Image (cartoon, rainbow, N blue to C red; front, side):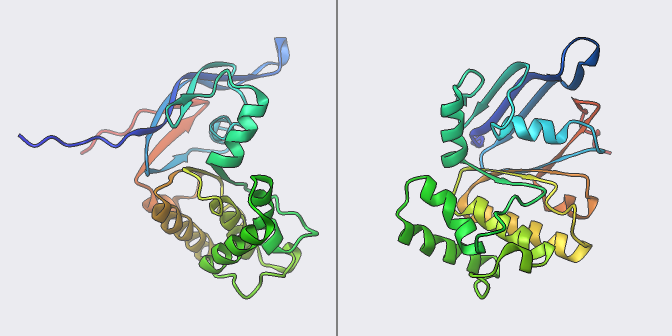
Length: 235
């Protein structure tokens, strides 16, 4: 009898809810969410705008805390961690690709990528070498000294991906990476995210409502009205 080994779990979410505000102004963004993502899996979290996708991603990325429930990343509970511990986790274990890129406009793209590495303790020379290498990987090796404002939307998204991948984190989260891009650019940056993160063995969760890139996922999970929807039954 052949025993099939199961990939270890990278992300475990159990009974997570998130409520913003109190009293009559309270808004429930997530309700009793359960989700498991395996190591090296590329998962796309899909659903309409306002469904709770970004809220869940922000909880996984240690940007928001859940109102209730339990979250484990890489086998460790983050629910009761201090703000300092969460910041350290974001710095060393998580790469986050923001929808709005969040690049520093006064720094070159080289320095935008190198800065988090320096903050994480790498010497500047080493951080710059790593920035150069990862920017070359995403096709921007000739634009190291360019400012973000001088790049196209697709190029800025590549910089954001390079910055997320540079520390070689085991977890990568991307929030609507194709939202501001045309079909061709959106497909290219998502393929780049998939290829480079796969080379690292990273676990990737992408929030999107762009069906043009669904085929790049190992698995898609639908969320609506703050609840994970049952997977459709196979025909």
